[in-house]
Length: 387
Ligand SMILES: Cc1cc2nc3c(=O)[nH]c(=O)nc-3n(C[C@H](O)[C@H](O)[C@H](O)COP(=O)(O)OP(=O)(O)OC[C@H]3O[C@@H](n4cnc5c(N)ncnc54)[C@H](O)[C@@H]3O)c2cc1C
Image (cartoon, rainbow, N blue to C red; front, side, top):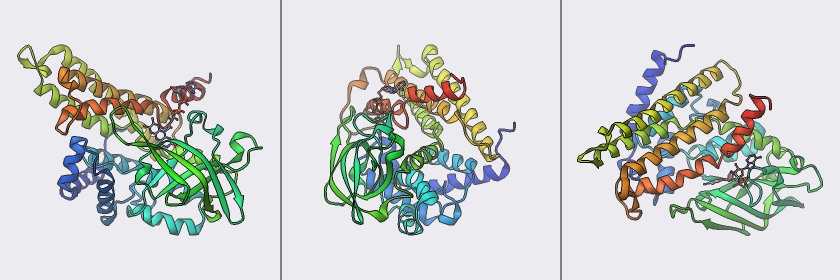
């Protein structure tokens, strides 16, 4: 199998590199470098707008909906270049999650209403799947929606909702038939976050940030026209959506960026009067994780090229998720080791120190969300090992 990029793909990569170098605003880039998320909502919207105006608002969407129509290889290269240049991530909830569901299962009116506003960054979406007690066992969710004329009335609670404090809309899984088998009684609703009866309550994380929320629904009236597809068929759409999370699930771009940062830190840190990077034991540990990242990158490319030949991705996505998250967590652990006692300086704005510590704690989430790594191992056990 040829794992080299073609001349066209290399030219494309250079075009992306040049574009990001000239169009990413310096203030946004600096904040991303410092891990300063105080203006995250503004920064993400501004960057989305810039990409949109260049025709690159949705790398993964087909051209008919205003996307780039790029294949998986170009999407991968775009992602890598954006990370390398310290561009903000494009939030997945609108672009990669709800949009593909609307494209596939939504009504024409829903497509016309929602997709353009996701593409140009007007609407910020968040995901309302998990609930207290319903994470891995998602089908047990209890938030209910009862039909009342031309509305659903929603009551219940969502948990671990990422960045919903900035959101204009939330896509929710709700129970519309309590008597049916768990997977059969679920529907997929689009809910305006300004609707009366919605309360967003922050969940403070270990790093002190306000990144996730609990969301309470108290007699929230949602027009029936905001139901996607058919009532009680939401589980099918929910699974389709999770499949779309797979794009770039290995997080190669993020790991590469953090590896470069680790080397910089180890170059500055001194041990026995010499740079830590010259310490053969520490350098070997960096080399080990770099090799593993390289191996993951090659595996990721194999999956991408197989998909390009129309082979559907199988349990490889689970493998990529487990290895990708383990590697990024390992790099963040090595960053803390490189900092040594300085890692105890947790507060304040600065360069790598507060960023590394906060990030070390924050990245514990990687092996939990998007289907925990234990659940991914179950999938591999069932689909690959046939256990
Ligand atoms: C930072 C963060 C952001 C998130 N953002 C969102 C969001 O925006 N929207 C959203 O809907 N959800 C979000 N989630 C929720 C996330 O999807 C769930 O946390 C995840 O699915 C795990 O569910 P749980 O927390 O209920 O843990 P549980 O399902 O209770 O699992 C607890 C532990 O038991 C293990 N376990 C559970 N079942 C099995 C099994 N069958 N076999 C082996 N081990 C098992 C798990 O791996 C885990 O280690 C987020 C979570 C985090 C941490």
